[in-house]
Every structure is written in C-alpha cells, then in structure tokens.
Length: 255
Image 1: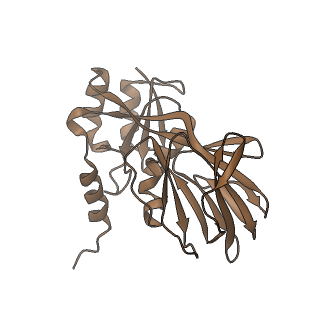
Image 2: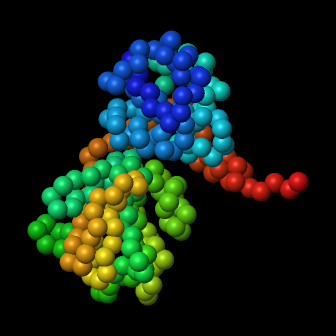
C-alpha cells in the first residue's frame, strides 16, 4: 500500500511506518500524524481518505483521531489487511472572492481590524439575492464552518457542534445587535456577506485571503470537495468519548 504521511514533527514511529508502507505523495491514503493542525494540513494537500493519528503528547490533540501513535502496530496490521472503512466527514467550505475560489477545512472568518466590522448577510437566489436580516450586523465579525471546524474555533465562539455533513453554520463573533444566534444553512444554499462599514480581514483556516473594505463581498457554500476519513471498527470513538477526552485534558487537577 502506498501512503502519504503528513506530520508536524519527526516522531520515531514514522520510521516504523516507512518500513511497512511505500511512502508517496500520491498514496492511496494519507496519515495525518500529530494534532488538528496536521489533519487540516493533510486535508488541504490530499484529496483521498485521511487517517488522523494523535501524537500521544496530549489527550486533546486531534479531535477526529480515534487512534494515537501508541496504536502503531494495530494501524499497520489493519491497513495491510484492509480492515477499515472510509467515512465521509463533510464537504469543504467554498469561499468565492473576486472570482477566485478557496476551500476551507475548519472555517472561514471575516474579522474586524481595529474596533468592529459592520456587514449584511444575504441568501443568493439564482442571479439575485435577498436579505436574511433587515439590518446591519456589527461586532468582531462572522465565522462560517462545517462539521470539522464546529468543534474548534466555532465551539469556543459559542457556535453549535455540527454532526451532519449536509449543513454549514454562520456564527457571529461578539455581535452587537438584536439577533446574535448562529444560523444553520442547508448544503445547497449560497450565502453572501457584504461589508457595510469599516474594513475587515477575510481568511480561511488561519490563512489570509484579503483585506475587505465597505462594498466588498464574498460568498460561501458547501463545495463538492469531500473530506473523508478512515475508521477502524474496533477503535471508533463516540462523540461523548471525544468530548470527555478533551474536557479531561483541560481540567485543572487538584494538587
């Protein structure tokens, strides 16, 4: 089996994996070793199924990984025997700005630069658009995410955890207005955000796209680019287990 390996560090277990598999940039699968950063990097670089593997340094590292490097023998044996399934996790978020498309794994955000950013939210219908709100939103900005990013920045910002790959979510960042709740949007919808006042920064997965000024806009939708992950039947963690792992790792223990 040919595999691609994406890792943020040179872990000793990687040498073992290289002995057992043919490592190639055009592998059948991609192993993302480390934390969520390695997973997002792998998802940007590789279009096939991804196997997230925690480094083992922190319990919270890698929300979507069911395994750690301590399971390296299990991983090798089951990959070679093809005892695994491939699961569609989500479709990447597509951002269109000035005719160019970008694809986010975690989220895309519009953020204020100095004090706040004011913007309007529209739903695109054919060649036209209609306002979702009859007023201008104000605050630190807006975050748009799907399944993967819903447990990252979105969760910290008070947004929902998303379990369906067929929706995406708009979460307002410290919104100042009569309506502040997140909005869940169907996969087939297109949303347009237009700046009304003050400049803002548009980025995706922490990478900058552009600085926007009043009158500038961008559109977001679920793309047709699928993010798929590899699962092993005997090692699949439930959502409750994953949340417990993260919460436990962040608790301050009494001395």
